[in-house]
Image (cartoon, rainbow, N blue to C red; front, side, top):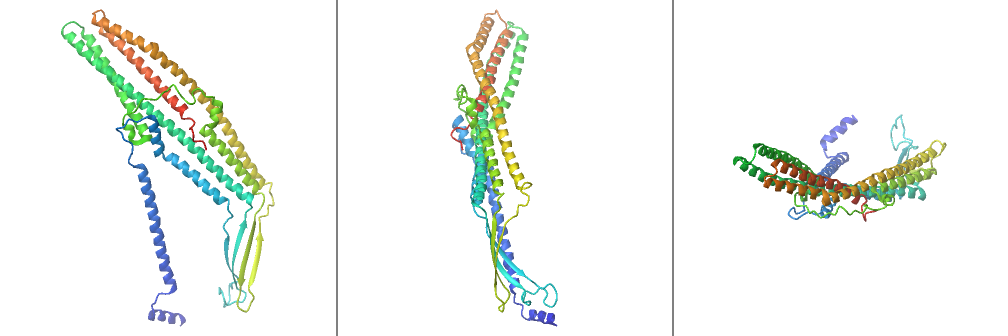
Length: 455
C-alpha cells in the first residue's frame, strides 16, 4: 500500500527530485570534462604537428657557415628541449618533496545496526555515532631535505644529459656539414676531369678519322669516360646522403650553398691534456651526477630508519541527549626487524652508488683511450695531407704534363696520357677522402666537450 501510494504521488506530481537534478549535474560535469580533455589532446596534437612541419626560417640563398648550421640545429633540436623539460620536472618535484604530506580528512559512521527493525539505519539506534576528523603525518625535516635532494640530483642528471645531447648534436651537424662540403669538392673535381676527358676523346676521334691515331686509343678513352661517369654517380649519391643528414639537423638550410672556411688543423682538444679535459666529458659528468643521486637516495633510506609520527583528531556525536566525543590519536610504524628491512634498503642504495662510481671510472678509461686514438689519427692525417700538397700531387701533375707534351709531340700515346690523368685524379680523390676522415675526427674532438655549457 505504501509503495502504491508513492507511485500515485509521483504520477500526480512529476516534479524532478534532488537525485534527478544531481544526476543531470553530474552528466553535465562529465561532458564538460570530456570536452576540455579533448581540447587538451587537440592542443597537444597541434603542437606535435607544428614541431614536425614547422616552416624553416633559414634563407637557402644565403651561404651556410658551420657555426650557423650548429646554431640552427640547436634551435630546432627536440632532444635538447626534452632534457631541459626533464630538469625542470625534477626541480619541481624537489620543491614538492621538501614539504609535509597533505593532511587526511576522515569521515566516520560507527555502530550501524546490521539486523533487526533498525537495520542499516543511521539515526534509529542510540549507539550509532557520526564523526569527522583530520590526520597529519609529520615527516621529519631531515628526511624531507634528503628526499628533496634526490630530485635535485636528478635535475643535475638531466642537465648533464642535456650536455650529452648538445655534444651529439654539434658533432653530428659538423660531420654532416663537412661531409657535404668535401663531397661537393669531389664531385666538382670529377666533373672537371670529365670535361677534359671529353675534349681528349673528341680530339682522338678526329685524329682517328684523319688516319693519325689508332682506334684502340679512342675506345680506351671512351672506356675511361664510362668509368669516370660511374664514379660521378657514386659521388652524387654520397653527396645526396650527406645533404639528407645535414637537413635532419638544420632543416631547409641544408639545400643552399655551404661555406668552406673550417680550419681542420686547429682543435680545442688537439693538443690538450686529455686526462684533465675528459673530466668535463658529458657522459662522465652524467655518471658523476648519477652517482651523486644514488648517494642522495642512500641518505633517504638511512633517514627512513627513523619513523615519522601521524597525529589525528576526530569530533563525533550520537544525538542531542548524549555528549559529543573528541578523539585524539597518534601512530607510527614499529620497526620490528630493521636488519632485514631498513638496513637492507640502505645497503642496496649504497651498492647502487658504488655501481655508478665503478661505471664512471671504467667509462673514463674507455673514453681516454678512444680520444687519444682520435687525437693521434687526426694529427697523423694532417701530416699525410701536407705530404699530398707538398710532393704527391705535384709529382702526378708533372707526370700528366709530361705525358701530354709527349702526346702532342707524337712521342707518346693517348693511353699514357689517360693513365697519368687517372693517377692524378686518384691522388686528388685520395687526398679528399683523407680530408673527410680528418674532418670527422676534427668534429669529434672539437665538439666532444661543450664549451660554456657546464652545469
